[in-house]
Length: 119
Image (cartoon, rainbow, N blue to C red):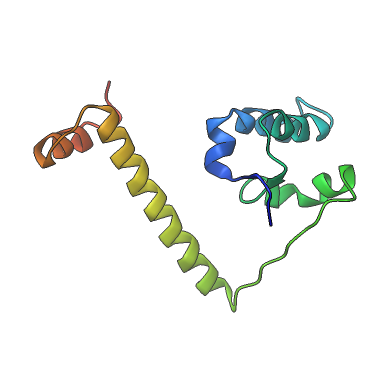
């Protein structure tokens, strides 16, 4: 479709999650500041949390926006799909963290994973 899409990982990476938290906690009155944060990083579409929870606020501020609704057969199918994605993302983050700690082989990786959360 040609959009530069921001998802939850990029939202965190670019600091947009902080602005969302300010909005959710009432420290920002207008969702326009959230929208400006996306635009300032070149995003013109979003998916995933937290935007999907605040789609009405986003739409009311941008009535020209397109909303795409996806539906699963039932809640259990949706949950299982979401859970598999979260496991996949978590594994990727663990591997990324391990590489960042200088892991070059399985022994280094195992040592790094066992020390996650420690400086």
